[in-house]
Amino acid sequence: MEAYFIYFLTLAAIFAIGTMAYNVSAGYTGLFTLAQAGLLGVGAYTYALLTINLHWTFVTALAAALVVPAIANGILAYASKKIRGDAFAILTLWFGFVVVTLFLNWRGATRGALGLNGIPRPEFLDDTFLFLLFAVLLTALSYIVLRRIVSSPFGRALGAVRDDEVAAVALGKDVTRLRVTSAVVNGVFAGLAGALLAMFLGYINPTLFDITLLVQFIGYMVVGGLGSLEGSILGTVLLLAVREAIRFVPLDPELVGAIREIIFASILGLVILYRPRGLIGKVELE
Amino acid sequence: MDIYLQIAWNSLTIAALIAMMAASFTLIYSVTRVVHVAHGGVVLASGYFFYFGWTHGFGFVGAAALAVILAAILGVAINALVYEPLRRRRPLTGTAGMLASVAALIVIQNLLLAVWSSHTIVLHTPLERVASWAVGPLVVTPVSVLILSVAIPVFVFCALLMRFTKVGRAMRAVSDHEEMAEVVGINSKRIRMMSFAFFSAIGGLAGVLAALFYNLQPPYAVGFAVDAFSTAIVGGIGSLGGTVVAAIFINTLTNLGGFWMTAGIKTLFAFVVVFLFLLLRPQGIFGKKRR
Image 1 (cartoon, rainbow over the protein chains, first blue to last red):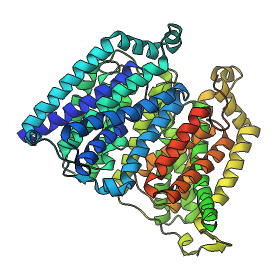
Image 2 (image 1 turned 120 degrees about the vertical axis):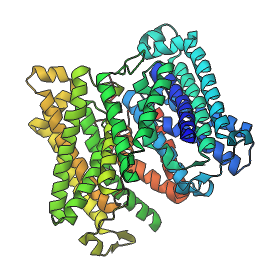
Image 3 (image 1 turned 45 degrees about the horizontal axis):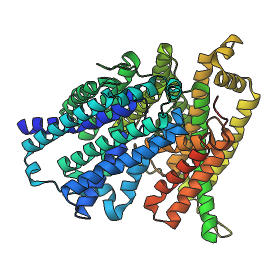
Image 4 (image 1 turned 30 degrees about the horizontal axis):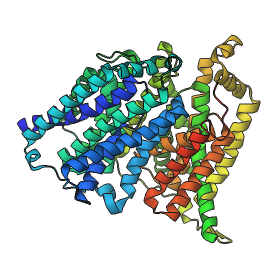
C-alpha cells in the first residue's frame, strides 16, 4: 500500500508539472493548443532515445528533452500568427497525432508499438522514495519558476494577449512573440515532465501519449482552473486520485479502463458546462 | 511510371473516403460553429453499427442503412446533450465547445471499446469474394470502386442541397448570420439539429466504407477526426470543393511520402508540407478571408 502511495504521489508530481506548463500557454496566454500529450511524448522519447541508443548522459539527455519540445511548440505557436482560432487548435491536435504516429512507425529507433524499456536513470533514483522526493522537488521548482514568470511584467503582458489582443497590439506589444515565448516555456516544462515520466516508468510506448493523455491534461487544467498554477496542482492530484480509484473496480481490466475514461471525460464535460472557472481558476473558459 | 499511376489511384480512393468525413465536418462547422471533434467518433461508431447489422442478418444494404440512421441519431444526440446546453450559457465560438467535443469523442471511443473490446474487427462481406480488376497497369479493388461510386454522388448531393434546397439555403443563412436568420423566421436551433442529422449520416456512410476499406478498432476515432479536420482547414472551412481538392492533395502527399521515404515518416511529411502551406495561405485553398 505504501509503495502504491509513493507511486501515486510521484505520478501526480510529474503530471502537475505538465499541467502547470499547459496552463501558462492555455490559461495565462489564451493560446489553446491540443498538443500537450504530444509534447510530453517528444520529451520522453528524446530522453529515452538519446540515453538508450546514443548513450548520452543523464544531464545532457535531460537538457535535450527540455529543448526539443520547446522548439517544436515554439514553431507551432508561431503559426498562430497566420492561422487563427479553431483552425490553429485543429493543427495542434494534428501535431499530437503525428507525433504518436511517428513513434509508432519509426521502428528502427523507437521499436514502434513495442515501446522502449530499460530507460536509464541516475542510480539514486532507483530508490522509489528518493524518486518521489526528486519529483516533488522539481515540481516545487517548476512552480516557483512559473510563478515568477506569470507574475512578472512579461506575465501581465501574456494576460493582455489573452484578454484583448487588439489592445495589446495597440500598446505596442509583439503578440506573436509573446505567444511563442509562452509556448516555449510550456514546451520546456512539458519536456521535463515527459523525461521524468520516462525515467519513472522505465518503459514508454507511443500510445501512452495519445489523446487519452491529452484529455487528462485538459481535465486537470480545466477542473483546477485556468490561469491558476495552484489550481493545476490541485486539479491534477484530485482527478488523478479519481482515475486511480476507479482502477480498483473488480471487473475486466479493459472494461474498467473504458469506464474510467468515460467517467473522466464526463467530469470534464460537466465542469466545462457548469463551472467554466474550475475549482480555483482566475479565468473563465470561453 | 505505373507505380505512380497506382499511387494516384490509391490516393484518390482514400481521398474520396476522407473527403466525405471532412465535407460533413466542415458543413457542420460552418452552420453551427462547433469544432465537432466527436465527428470522428460518429464515423467510427457507424462502422461498428454496420458490423452489428451485418452480423445480425440485416444484409449488406440493410446494415449500411441501419448504420447511417444510427450515426444520424448519434450526431443529433451529441448536439442535444453537449452543444445546445453549452450554447444556452454562452456563444459557442470559443474553446469550450471544442474541449467538450474532445470529451464526447473519448466517451464514444470508450463506449465502443466497452461493447466491442479493443480487438481489431475485420469485416467479411461478399465484396471480399470479388476479385480485383486489372485496368491497364492499375489494380482496382471492388472496395475502391464502391467508395468512389458512393462518394461522388454524395458530393453532388451535398452541393445541390446547400445551393438549391430551402433547408440548404436556411443552413447557409444560419452560417452567415444567425441573428439575421432568426429575424427572417428561420428556426436556427432546428436548422442546427438538421445539420447534425444530415451530415452525421454522411459521416456515417463514410464510416461504413472505411470499415470495409480498413477494419475496425476503437482508436481509429481520433485518426478519422484528425484526417477530417486537417482536410477541412486545408480546403478552407465551409468549402465543399476545397475539401475535395485538399483531400486529394494531402493523401497524394502522404502516399508519395510513404513511397519516397519510409512509411514511418509519411504523416510527418504531409504535416510539414501542410503546415508550410497554411502559413502562406491560412484561409485554405478555396476559403474566404475571415471577416
